[in-house]
Image (tube, rainbow, N blue to C red):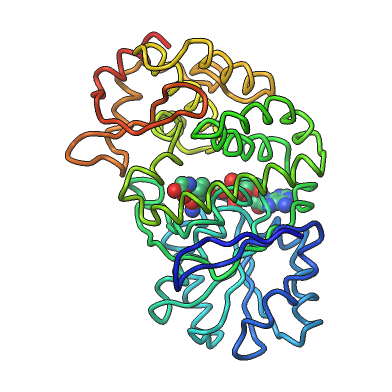
Amino acid sequence: MERLTVELGARSYDIVIGDGLLDAVGAQVAPRLKRPRTMIVTDAHVADLYLARVSASLAAEGVAASSLVLPAGEGTKSWEGLARLTEWLIGEGIERSDHVIALGGGVIGDLVGFACSIVKRGCAFVQVPTTLLAQVDSSVGGKTAINVAAGKNLIGAFHQPALVLIDPTTLATLPARELGAGYAEVVKYGLIDDADFFAWCEANGAALLAGDGAARHKAIAHSVSAKARIVAADERETQDVRALLNLGHSFGHALEAETGYSDRLLHGEAVAAGMVLAHQFSAAKGLCPAADAARVRDHLAGLGLPHSLASAGINSGGAALAAHMAHDKKVRGGKLPLILTHGIGRSFVTDDYGLDTVAAFLDGA
Ligand code: NAD
Ligand code: GLY
């Protein structure tokens, strides 16, 4: 079992990583409660697999737990999902000191976090992430949101969890495609500022995806440790530090929008292609060695992840893709800050390039 802390003063919290930790959720949570009562929120896939174990672990500590099972999928991160969840929490008689347990992937974590930021003006919640993406990224850092017609994650709040409990063995049931999408976020930490970790990914990525438990544990621990450091330095993304976590996301966002945020391209798959494009754009502008861009492409391509517009199923022109980027919520003063790079592990934020330049690059990509 490994324990890390996200250092945020009064809002600091621990991240615990351990095989079989699902059976210890009760033991981890019970000491924090003011009354022996909690509410578990999950989705239908995860409920079938893991809800009984988590409920039993709470019961073993004398904690009563009611549960709400929501439909699986991005559609649950919606006004309707939020209304259903918040009304349920109120109906369950939630008190502000109760800890709601978010058991599932990023959809459940983002929705529960947002609900807990507004119910009774703020209640505590515990993240129990069960996808690789959620274990290495979305469960840590307190970004919570729902999607609306105008775009993804446009309504939300910063609301930090009280605790994050990661059981890597839950990945055994995760579909291979979801695992690959989460792996892109692992690689991201190497590309941001840790060339040694990228080299580790090159050496161990295939084993991780094939089920190697030690590789999974190391990747998760390394990734959340990096995320904890970045969040502690720039919790609200005001200093161009946390923004680095968006490496590949601006290009990826355009690809996701172009594919209608559908199963045609999962978020992590769009990030994989987006990270390659960010490196290739940087190389085209003379900022980054072309060999580094090729290394990133080769690693992701070798693992079957999207690594180009074509492999992401995109055949639209650059102008159409850049138009999606103009709607990015990170636009400031009419300019979209891009995360570019001077090479592997040397990314930086810039608004030196206009979307017309990006569109011209994408036409040739
Ligand atoms: P998800 O929550 O939809 O999970 C993907 C699928 O896997 C779902 O069908 C789910 O039911 C299933 N699943 C979950 N755990 C499983 C398991 N152990 N075994 C079998 N099936 C399992 O998707 P996700 O990729 O985890 O998260 C995507 C969401 O995360 C998006 O909404 C994105 O915006 C958000 N996100 C948030 C942040 C943040 O910082 N808050 C960061 C990145 C992404
Ligand atoms: N996933 C990006 C962030 O947490 O800032």
